[in-house]
Length: 130
Image 1 (cartoon, rainbow, N blue to C red):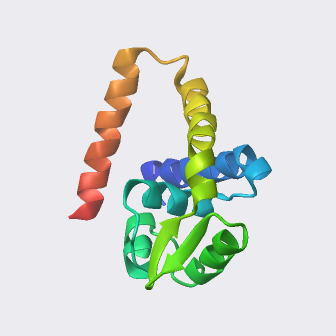
Image 2: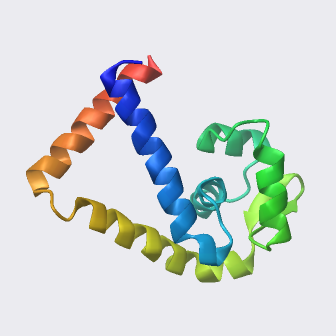
């Protein structure tokens, strides 16, 4: 694995761990959060649409969805996924926790450094999407 791919894998792993830790009090994991966030922006998605949006491993998706239903975060209606009223109510709190953590991670960067990293990451994403 070359240096860039290794760093991407490390960052992804560290981010997963950080989100798991930050959202522990809500009984949410990184994968749970990805689904909740996707449904916040586009409710009424099918399971296939959620898998495409979140890139959660297809072997795990049903387990994650079952967990979210059990915890009253999402519900099914006509084979579509929706956030529950409970989730809509606490979503701003969850989002604040993540936003604060992201701000802490970048607090020692200048605005130029931040934007440069984002541009470089965007270029990497584009090259992977080809």
